[in-house]
Amino acid sequence: MSMNSNSTVKRLEVLRGTLSEVGRELASRPYATRGVSHRAELIRVLLVDDHNLVRAGVKLVLRAFPEICVVGEALDGKQALKMAARLRPDIVLMDLDMANGDGLTATRSLQRELPSVRVLIVTMHSEEEKLLPLLAAGARGFLSKAAVERELGDAIRVVASGDIYIRPAVAKELARARSERTPRQKDTRSRMERLSKREQSVLILTARGYNGPEIGQQLGITAKTVDTYKQRIEDKVGISHRTEYVRFALEAGALRDS
Image 1 (spheres, rainbow, N blue to C red):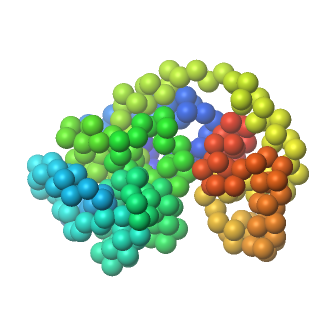
Image 2 (tube, one colour):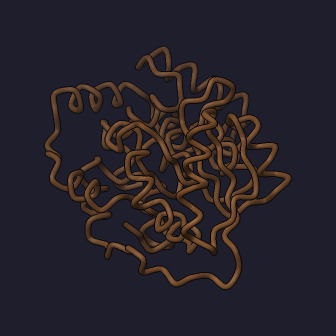
């Protein structure tokens, strides 16, 4: 599933609404199966996975796509950052679960340090479980390892063209998901109201992927003051990790109109 890289990507960067709303957005787009024109230049890819057999299998699949070239292999997120800085690939194929530097953290760092490098997540996890935090972190596509043989080449080409890739079947499934507020969502909304306006702003900006100094710049306060607000948020609603910020803000509906 490819999506226009301007208006749609901007909407996904603020993670509008719920998974079902994102699914409807994705499902409304034309599926780009072999519909992305071949580039004149090679698409340079960095593989990031801590399993040798997985990397070997991916390279075997990519032999069918002469315009895609694997320029390097990394065993974890930390190594991926160093290699991406040196090699400057077009696409990083990123696993999530790696002992020495996980894929989500590495994706967030790449988005901050090398924004021109596009990350395509290839993982065993389901989209429903991981999709929204990864889009918030800057990933430009998500593919299950079970679909690698069928869809990897197209996914790389879609992401390289500037669009976002999500499997069409997944988009339709998310679109059908129930979007009514659950009791948990209502409780989260109530907890959100415990926060001051400034604390809510810090929470939302954190969920959108901004770091302390960036939040401080937007709000006209110091990074140290941002940390103080984050401590108050943790004390009031019990969240601290950034993925918890994303989940909390989504359930509270705080990103719907951001």
